[in-house]
Image (cartoon, rainbow, N blue to C red):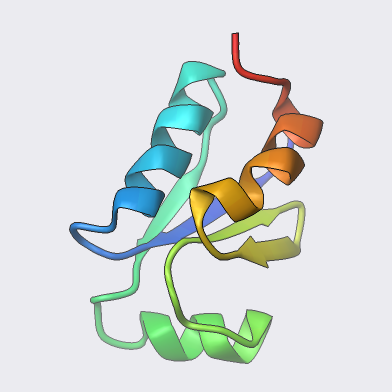
Amino acid sequence: MAEVILYTSPGCPDCAAVKRFLNARGVAFEERDLSRPGVPEEAKARYGVRVAPITVIDGAASYGTFADQKARLESAFGPAS
């Protein structure tokens, strides 16, 4: 299974949508909260952005709204049922 890291922010509806998508497919992921000290700097240094959600699948990052990320997520983990 792919290694997945999800950078999120509290109250972010697109973050919640990505989490629902991954959970519905049984995809394990590590969540990193961008409101915690040091996490935004880590995201910026590694992936060039610090806005949630950032979805990292096997080291390749995508960001933007859930709608922006949906095609890549479906390609990696399957379409919605």
